[in-house]
Image: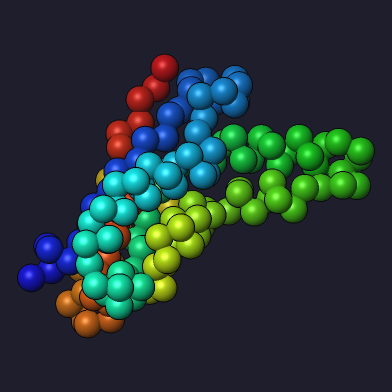
Length: 150
């Protein structure tokens, strides 16, 4: 059955309204990823290593990584943009969080990121398709919780 092959994890981004007031309160990519990793780890550790290693990751995102974007923008403005931070840039990519999760959990299956999928429907549907097709033995699906405006 597909349901016992899906590990659903939720992570909580925090949005400050109006945007760009401050970066305090915006979790980093690593902090968001750790929320998923902590939820998935126990279930993954109870699985055969071959199943775990071939698991796919399907991540839904309903927002950007504002803290990373602001950090990169600040590096771009310093010294007239002569010394832009490559480290800061990589965290602005939508796939950064998924990459961090995959590496930390040693997942070797597909890694798919759906931007603008705040409900997680696209990620869950994709995971089910991969499982039914026999492409993966297990799926980790990461879905954001509802965003609370302050």
